[in-house]
Image (cartoon, rainbow, N blue to C red):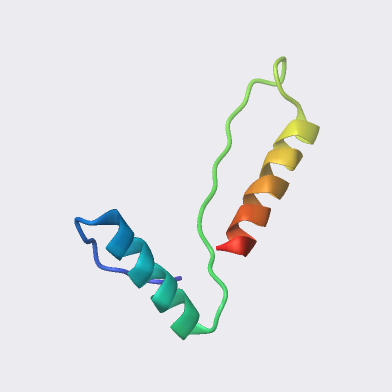
Length: 60
């Protein structure tokens, strides 16, 4: 888990967050909550969403 102070400029905030992550040399965890109605989506679709989210986080 990292702690990055809030900055008004999003680009500066993201740059500081990336620097903090690179300096930390550890993994990052965070909460994720997904709520769906089973008549519209099932576990397969939620699994695909989680896989895509993890893929994007791995690139970060």
